[in-house]
Length: 114
Image (spheres, rainbow, N blue to C red):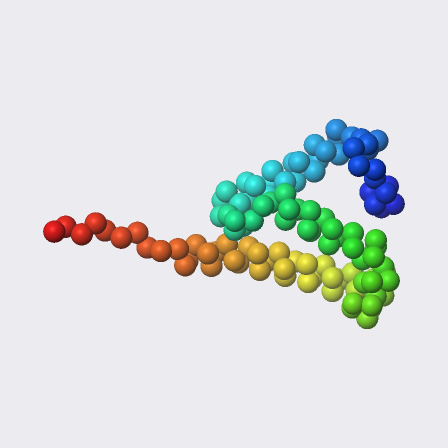
């Protein structure tokens, strides 16, 4: 975690290409899900992945802030379970928004014959 938080701009990480390939694979998987309509089309999946990646490390990287916001110990099993549940719910809302977006799309109109 410290290595991730302390990376210097424009300095390749020791894992370099291998880590970049794994991260790109995750983003490509989100793009495929977006193409299947599982995610809204107007969301940049690279940014979405970054948001959820940041969410996954936030309780560790921002321990005191996490404790202040939630009034829970970020290292406790209860917090971890609750946090995972809430992040999953947020992801579901994003997925549901894609379905709602599709159901609210305008119906194609027939050309008037006249």
